[in-house]
Length: 383
Image (tube, rainbow, N blue to C red; front, side):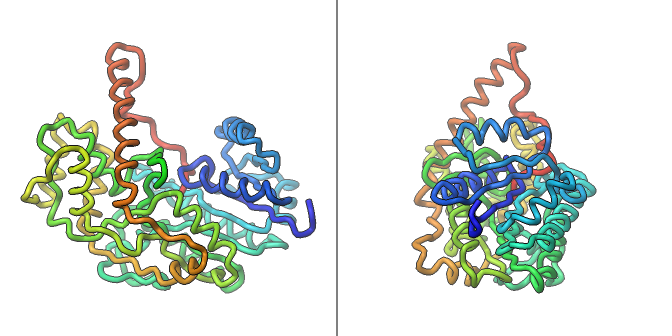
């Protein structure tokens, strides 16, 4: 490895964003002597090595460990070598599944961040620590939310938001001594070019319900749905983060990875309904009524993991992104409007649900597990 070579250390593989970030970093590594080191939980290590082998990633290495543990669960020799060589840290590991317990959220989102910061302090060659937070650290705040704001007396909808906020507090405090950049993506959806997405959660899930609903009459939206539904495609999140990670001016700053001009929730759902050949009901219903509707037997199984998302649809939060626009100026990168790729998202989702329906028929014949009742996700996924 050359003296100027970069060593990127990534947590959160094989999560939704993490897998795509690693692919992008490996593409860049092929043009030089850079290396990519992945922290992977032991149960995922064999699959991770197989993935990297399929990519022909000779400059990638898998370290078995866990962000929850001291020294990230690494051996003394592995820890010392990593601290000696790493130049760029990408911390994406997070607990996102809303069904997790508060102690689980704290172990991964808070203590995991504390352990990654310890590596940053020990790293002799560190040029940037990239921490993935979430726009939802704003909790129940409404109105315009600035990137530089964090502790504003907000309350939180769930333990995920709260522990991501607490983790960001740790990174904020460390920015006085470490070159750290904080990224706050909004709702991350599929690839704008292919529609590919491998998780269905968060406010976006309500759109999936509309597309996949078995009812002849589409589900009504809660409230008036005039609030912006801020979504970003995963390819923009990755490309923007990599570009900002290279910008010296980004050290010490927080960046909203958001759509600067989001559509209202109602407009997004109108577009989805039109694609599906449906029409939105002209009247809306209170959110509590819709929550009750989703518990009807016909919809309960499909919607059980999505009900917590409904409260986001009417949340009037506007994420200012001055830092994002400034740091991406001259790169040619911009967040595409959802109207430009929504059809691809819907087509991918419909195809996925069609496969799930086929799997469910097989399950009814006794040949498979219930595809609509998956096991709980692993503890450390992507942010």
